[in-house]
Length: 158
Image (cartoon, rainbow, N blue to C red):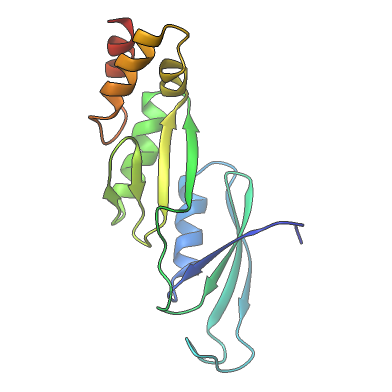
């Protein structure tokens, strides 16, 4: 067991979510699945209670705790992408599987978990030592849903 594990609350869908993450993100895998040894408020004996999984090398535990709590933007995974193809693939996988787009590279998966699909080129552009270039790139990003690296670079260049 890891010293620190992110515990994510689901309403009976932790195993489905873990499988989606493992299929979508590199260095991700579904581990042990534990079934409830007795009835509990959100389920019955034998139901999947928790799922151990790894997302991009980060250990997680999916807890099927029921409908009491929902995910919010207060927690998100930020995924650094290397190019537009990787950005598109991850964004489209999340959105195409029942998720929803948001602004500035943010989206939510169908379970309500927030993701920031963030090209490394975006970070470089908004931290450009030239304040005017950084501002142009930042202003371009503020108009986007999924990040368009070419548009960011064009704005950065002026």
